[in-house]
Image (tube, rainbow, N blue to C red; front, side, top):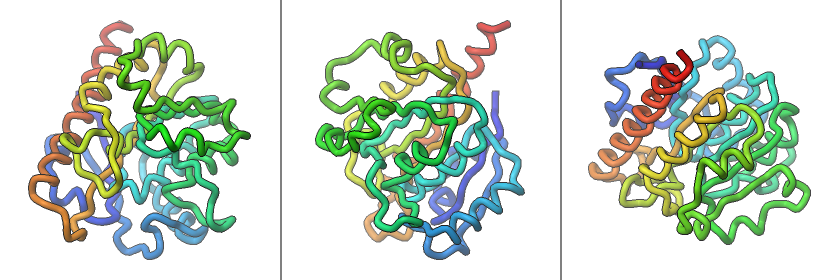
Length: 257
């Protein structure tokens, strides 16, 4: 089964990849926008929202590098039922905003918890252990952070999902959670493997409906350090993640027949 996917084009990263070429895909172009890389003011958010309004939404979205992870905040705004955000990320993205009206790739989860009445809980998987302590106390009841030490314990993910996830799910994957042997991002990276990501995703789907998925963590081609090897790694990882989502969706449909 091939689902229609959307590619968010901020830095032309996907022009160097081909994982989507056999899919039904659409481009959303944002290369003309300024002041949206890493940080985004209200004017920039308004411009992005306007383009989203005129675009037919898809369940699977590739949203460029981790610098644009705040796009998840905008995509989740379309969900009109109580839901859980399952975030695969090496960072919490829950830092206080530097300025009141400034969105960033580092504060969007906190902003979503503040602004989105349907977002009931956040599960962060693969986060650096030292960052867990930085989650503001006021959000601890709504946030479960599963760090790298816990990952090394090879937990039972099906039990985990049943215990901590109480609603239908939106999944957001920042590839910086993946070991650098398998992907290359412009942020410090975690220890999760693509195989483990797949295993966790399958356990979540067994008991919860997936409302949407987005994937970020590209290494922008305008960065001097990018190599052909890095492009090949990211292209392969994106294809593997997409194949996983589609295969799990087919299996879920077959179970429900």
